Image (cartoon, rainbow, N blue to C red; front, side, top):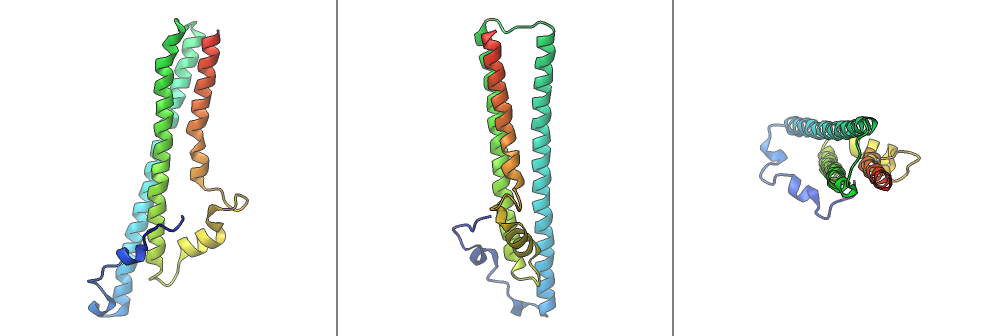
Length: 174
């Protein structure tokens, strides 16, 4: 994730809580570690919710395609042709909202993992930000190393929308 405009470290750390307020450095680090664990769990839950949202939209689009196939197989035709416009608009709006949800989850997870990296700055190791994201995955900038999932999954609603447009045009012309 790119660095936000705000220096997150200035707002992340609570000025009223410092190492001096703890009995030991170990206790202070244990508290940071506990917050780190909780925050990682929250980031993981965001990823799970994104997976559920994608499964919902994939299922919905699969049902639409199946129902359309059954209707066409049974000889149903959209007559007059303008009757295609309403279902097409609904499907295209659905694809747009699906794409926006993916983008919103990308922003939310990106922010969460940026904060995870900031928390790691106070821990002995930085497995997510420095080791995994910056070094191993090259921040997702080199597709031969790593192609971020969001870049791939955000294309799927566009593929469905394109398919719906092509199908509508083909039905319109028949």
